[in-house]
Image 1 (spheres, rainbow, N blue to C red):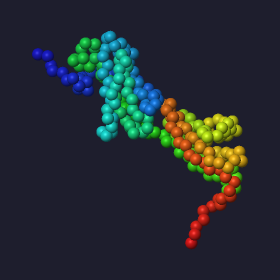
Image 2 (spheres, one colour):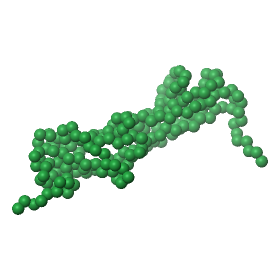
Image 3 (cartoon, rainbow, N blue to C red):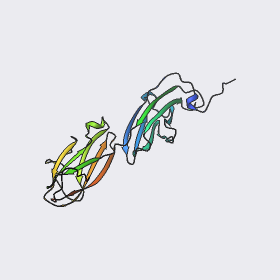
Image 4 (cartoon, one colour):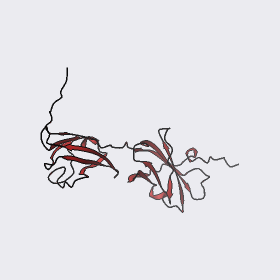
Length: 219
């Protein structure tokens, strides 16, 4: 009499491990995770790959895996709401024998990072047009940020944030606005290691009106 087998791939016995690879890319407004089986099991006419993805956080929904041949893909939001660890499991079956024990299986954790939110502060000189900007530098993001760029969205400032107009990632810089009292909309854009961009825009008010460069306390 044949032994009864489960339809749940996680309960099927396997004869070997088959480590797969994964790659995370930006596909705004999500991160797309591509799951690639070992090359010797990639032929869909000979093998069936079954992918399951389970979030470590029980409050998150399990993403659905879309298949193209034996390659799997799933998406999670890049806004931080679905950040965390996801256990990805692969079970490989001989084609047409999906009711039999899997011939190969492997699982690993895939980490979806928290959204790197761009933030900066600014301080103008007491009686002039120079403004100092301070922010978390690229190095301080511990590898999750690829680039930091700046832009003034309501004026064409070709030399902003510096004389070369290049990206500014040192953590601080000063810029002198062109003797022009006004409000400048300054945009800071972070590109994360997967290629997604995250933006913050603040109004920077520039005026020659002298302001004290210290706090005044009234007794």
